[in-house]
Image 1 (cartoon, rainbow, N blue to C red):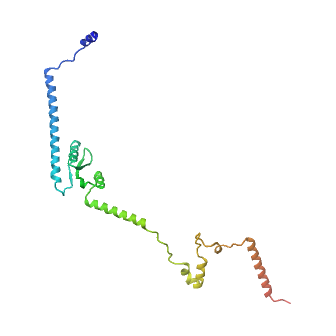
Image 2: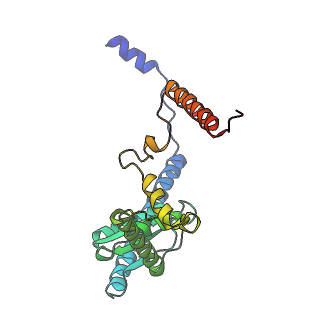
Length: 227
């Protein structure tokens, strides 16, 4: 301890302040405290004015919203605090440091999400715009409901084979053609027996040769004998 005490005593002590310096520091401190007290009093009076404005404005049932001029953040926070204490709703819109302001509403007349979104974008908003949006949404829902309930219409051809070709091939022929070309209900195609020759190649060639022989014999029968 003796060594430590000797070391401490040998160290240079901070220079003592002169009386003039002490007075200057004291004066600065008093000025700072005075400014802080004045700012606190100014904010208190601002809050009192806001609260008084709420009472005078909203005592009229026709007034459902109150808009404040753009102000700094500390004043906006006072408006928000006073609105909450008064049972009101408050919202800030605009760009901070430029034109940010506060709107205060009655709780029973709270702004809808469409209004909040519009004001945050800086778009205009009024009762006419609100009603237009409501009507637009109503029509959209109505169209969606109609689309869901709408049944597909049964296709009915404007004409059929018989009516289309009756003037060309006659009434009876048209009826017969319509029967032969009736659509297969299972696959939606004309039956294969109406579309292609189902005979084999051998049968087809045999039929052709038989027809040729029949034709030759017929011609030979009809040709007169030279004897």
